[in-house]
Image (cartoon, rainbow, N blue to C red; front, side):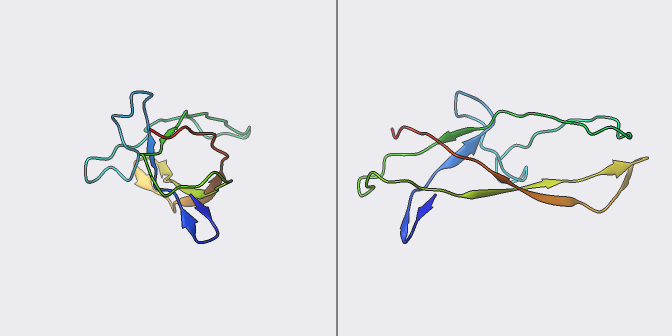
Length: 97
């Protein structure tokens, strides 16, 4: 997360126990996998993501923000369609270790 030139390191996790780091599925990271039928009506899916900030001794109290980019690949009849990219904005209230 960033506030001007100040940065806070963090990881995003799939589980509340902070054992499954979210990523692209490589280097010991995991992804969310789901399926649903595309139709005329919009489909909404909610996924809980957990953030953890390791201890950072030089961090000062302030407001930090970041943008998380999510890739949604679409498959139709087992053929890959063009991936749709979108940004997910989020506000975190987090406690440091």
